[in-house]
Length: 244
Ligand code: SF4
Ligand code: FES
Image (cartoon, rainbow, N blue to C red; front, side, top):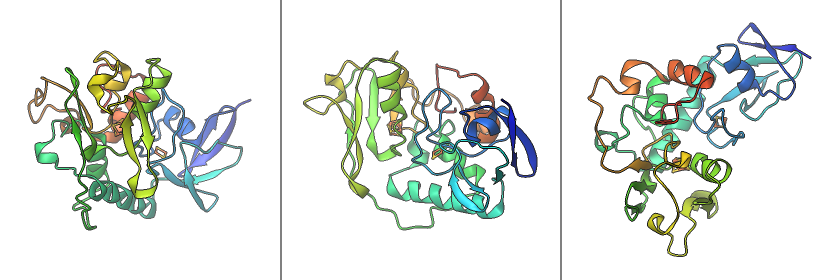
């Protein structure tokens, strides 16, 4: 049965089981997101998709739509909250965009531009993080990992492997590689795996193809993230999903 919710004053239809995010994207309404990818179950970690539902804040990617909900999303207050979340992600990792191969194609960076983030605002953690170049074709840089678990989900659910996992608690939570050595080169990870192409940041990079797109022609040089993610919610481009 089709019923409706209201998002920013617009009447939006939804079907049973759809989340607020699903209904919004299907109706052409953009809600910022990082850990959400339409091909995977919701994760609810980045909190960028926060909306106000009948006056209470909740994550739109995990909240099922129900008849008569009144949702606010594109408000100054919520966008300011989202900007703070992105700032927190920037200071938690070592996001040195000028030297990152994903710059211009990175959803975290594009979200910062979209939300008009001018500086990280908070004190940088400068956490010492490992890079793992043990795999012949893929480079893993935990300095840029935002713990969205898209690689974990893709490896398990689509590739039928179990290359990645999450370990630790609180601020010590981190991505791990499921090998006795902990090294990517000792797993069956392949450059053709979906998990190799799903990272929204520059944490998982394909070797020998960095900086191949000239500045001005990179994904987010051309369009902002709302346009790109709206388009990608209709069809996924498996060759490079950093922009989805
Ligand atoms: S490596 Fe990339 S895809 Fe995997 S959890 Fe970190 S940010 Fe997400
Ligand atoms: S997109 Fe909803 S919490 Fe990340």
